Length: 128
Image (tube, rainbow, N blue to C red; front, side, top):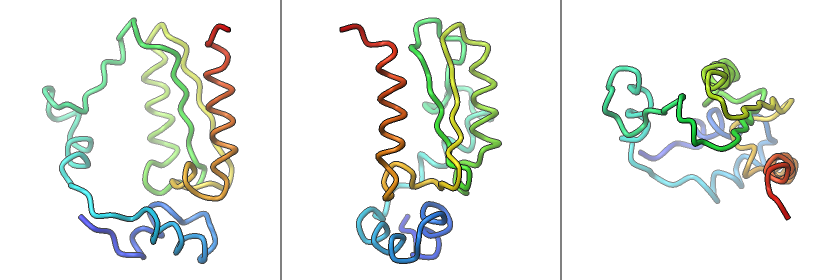
């Protein structure tokens, strides 16, 4: 399923300049299978889907949700609901909302801020 530039701009690159959005589209937009998207969308309807998450898994490690405030693909409400679901798990769960950022937060010009947050989170649990 290829995305048009306009679809990519709305879904991924809505929080960057037009020039950066075009660069991201040229670099990262490739046709992909639609099946994983439909599986994820139907997770609650199909109890045998590969996309189902075991929120009670006692062996999972620390979990950090990072969300762009302007993300049109996985909006804050969805990320926050997932975070709240994980609160039932005994493992540590944290959430970060990044102001002014969209879904492309790991590939756009501000990616280093996201990488630093993720590394700082992981670093709290790695023993030297």
